[in-house]
Length: 267
Ligand code: SF4
Image (tube, rainbow, N blue to C red):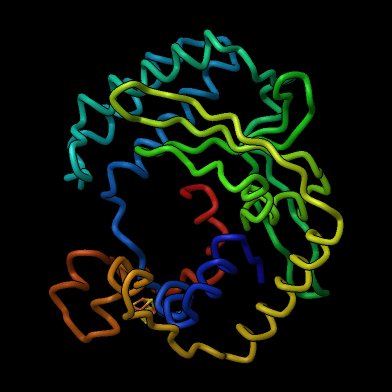
């Protein structure tokens, strides 16, 4: 069985959610504009490092999503997101703080790690390069609001960065956050993940896989304000037995339980 960060993280959020997705084959519909924009933007970033026309790639990739019945949040529109994306690419080019040597090898890198004789763990790292001259693992993020930077050290608790540091054994990590707001901004957030954190994450992965293999899928529902994961969970319709909500949010693709690692390419 091949596991991924997304699988482990979904199980830890709510084991029932894991069962809906990976055992029963229910998948969220790909109509979230922010997510599809993030994918298009990452392709444009790859084009930038390959010395191609990044704005043209963004425009082409985002145009391909235009007629997919996208769901936009708040004030977003297709045009506005494209305009913000082009401004962010311009700013990224002007600031020139990231270097990626051999971009064909150091972008979207697949790492695999054996976690037991019959299980392995796979992850796709956005890039390995240099931020202001320091070699580090890089993760691109697109968002409509700034990531919190206080208190200092917060980033070292980011589970995805800890996971990727554990997979690659690279301790210096950074998130490059492309903020789509009225005046666009790029945050360059970096931190160091210690050996102990990496080892603890490895234990967490082994422990979680044991629980999955023991078929422990009890729901962790959360109906109390303000932490209410059920209200934003795409599987709410299944848990409430409401077909209308199921039809709006999910499609069923049975038999996909061994392809969960593909989620890594979409988050
Ligand atoms: S709706 Fe709540 S209980 Fe059901 S899968 Fe989602 S998070 Fe879990």
